[in-house]
Image (cartoon, rainbow, N blue to C red; front, side, top):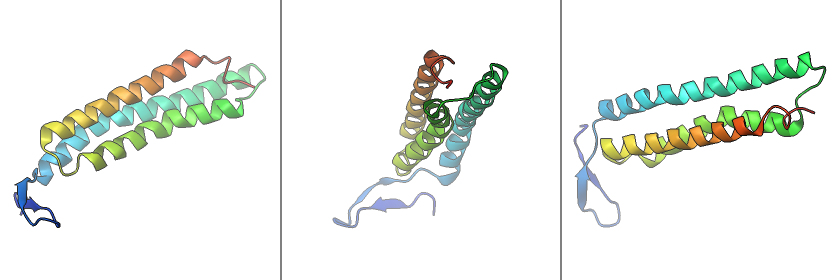
Length: 122
């Protein structure tokens, strides 16, 4: 039943064959590991900057907490969005969507890195 044709409700015509579930799951797991690394990087930034702020007898500003939480939640949201967009596509477009999401997540992490600790502390 994994190779059943996809029909559109409006026209009832058969458009193409669906990607087998095991292939989609394998692609999602493979790229999911990269997204998990980005989430772990965001958690490390939050913990590390919090320790830095405490050593300087300061604390993270509200802006800093929001930025660091975006660094944690951003890759998760991007992964779910890429999975949702690619759910009815072939394996190569799915992989391309996940790859584009990883690139977007890397840009978010680089922008957070360029802000520096000074702008995130109160």
